[in-house]
Image (cartoon, rainbow, N blue to C red; front, top):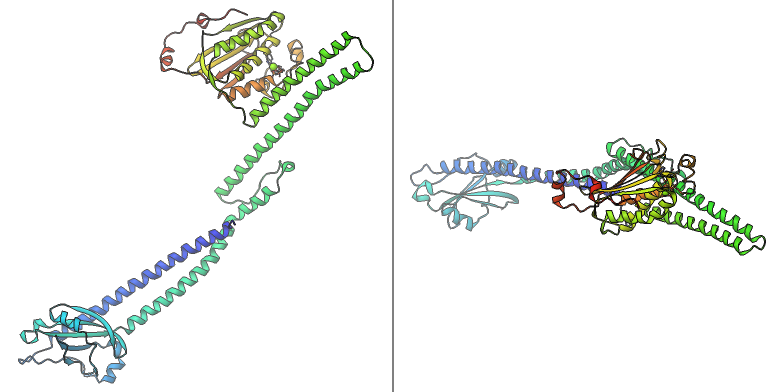
Length: 496
Ligand SMILES: Nc1ncnc2c1ncn2[C@@H]1O[C@H](COP(=O)(O)OP(=O)(O)OP(=O)(O)O)[C@@H](O)[C@H]1O
Ligand SMILES: [Mg+2]
């Protein structure tokens, strides 16, 4: 099950804050304990060293403490301030103890032995119902008589422990309060932080094919959310544009297919009204055949374009020669050129090797050459050239016709766009307006581009296709620096 982002954010926030608070409390506890212990130890050691210094001023070596004359009752009333003192022999016999003490300090033989051997030993133990900390202080330096004697000074730990205890409770309460308030604060923060997202989701949910004009206008007061809204709206712009292109494309396609269908239907119905002789049937069938061919071409073109729209144009790249590919197209067009009285000329080196989809580039070249032949006009000229330029093959098709309508350099590549047939001697009326759109799609698929203009030396339209498909051996780069012979000298074909 997916978890709510808000809850997750709030939880993580609370965990982080609580962990931070816990760390602070633990650190405070440790530092405080260290300070208290250092103070207490210093005080105990001070008392021990003062008592040790003043312990014996008699020649016999007899010892006595210099201390207040307190009764045990008085001592217990200031119990926390009292330092208990006792002198032991190394084997654990009490030799002397503070006047106000009624019982011996806890005897620790092991500590006594270590201290008798000259070591300073610290111990904690229970004494008279209290917890005390003792130092076992060797008295060797008082002389031979005290060689084995140890002074034990003890201090009650009550105040220290009580204070630490209070700190622990206080810290625990703080951690609890922090946890609760950070969960609440985290939820509040997270709710505020994701409010624009909820707005955006609500608005996006309400959008569909019918409301593509709508845009997201979520309340977003931060840079990140403003960017999100902007990105989504740009995406919606693109979706709307592509929806509209699709709609137009479908409408145009059905319109284009309807015309030949209607024509064919009319002719067939007319022919069926009464019996006809074979010649009449043949004429009707021929006409129907032409319409079917035309529809076939349109469907073929539509399929290529639809495949490209779906990103499904799969290039079948193979090694080939652009020059011989062009010559093949010219060969195929030569019959039509002769019929139309158009002079067809090829400018190309003997070979322009590259890696490309031969089928698609044949179609591209064919579409351009057919247009040029149709629009060149009677007694016109068409020139096709293929030249290598670095790793690019430059294919140019130009003619001596009227050229494309000024200002339509981009529009000629739109689907179903056709110029006014009256400009082009009635040519183009039977075209479907898909040829150049397909040219563009094929050039794009090869990573290239196509450009239309009217600056042909022949006086008409000029289409220039740039195809980055050539194998470029390193030697060729250096060779381009040397003056190259004119292309015509590189094996140009004579007009077909
Ligand atoms: N060489 C040219 N000279 C003048 N106009 C041209 C030339 N080539 C194309 N055009 C213009 O561009 C329009 C679109 O050309 P395109 O090749 O896309 O479609 P078509 O030739 O009409 O139909 P199709 O190629 O699908 O049979 C043409 O109708 C014509 O007006
Ligand atoms: Mg065409």
